[in-house]
Length: 203
Image 1: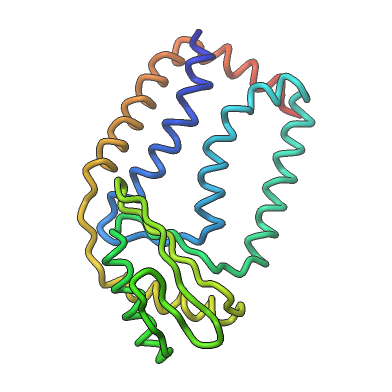
Image 2: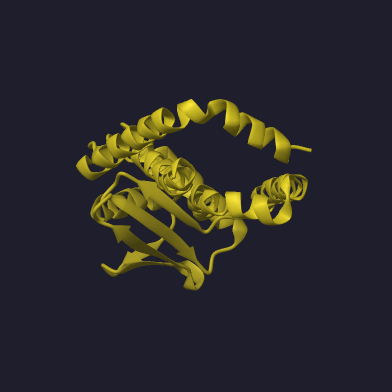
């Protein structure tokens, strides 16, 4: 019972903790689309760890996990982002900041209200999650160099922005911490057994 509870609650609490921390900072936090995806997948993958360990065996599982980590590092080193997720910022404010960043760069643009059109068929679109005030900013049809320069200008602009604390995010953070405390209390009596099982799976 304790194991099943932990298997379900730990990944959810971890993801809630990540979201809560990102959305309660004093400054908006910007991640690349890949970083955001890895954070979600990393937290949710813990659902499948016990099954994978039981099916593959400890040595094979940890070997695959190590390869996956190394491959992820390689992807990050060669990745050229064209999408970014800004946490704790409403869409309308994010749009204004993007426009300011474009002016800083001296790029010509046309704001249509739904998209921002740039030169050479490039454009910027926005996709917001209102409840948590998260915004995904996408740069379309742009070369790698433009993405890097745009991200740098946008990041500089965000440094001067003060973010209001999101109530839903604060609730999410409190829930995550509460669940983790409860899980620690539930699993504490089984500590020696858990350590023994983990060591059995280690190479």
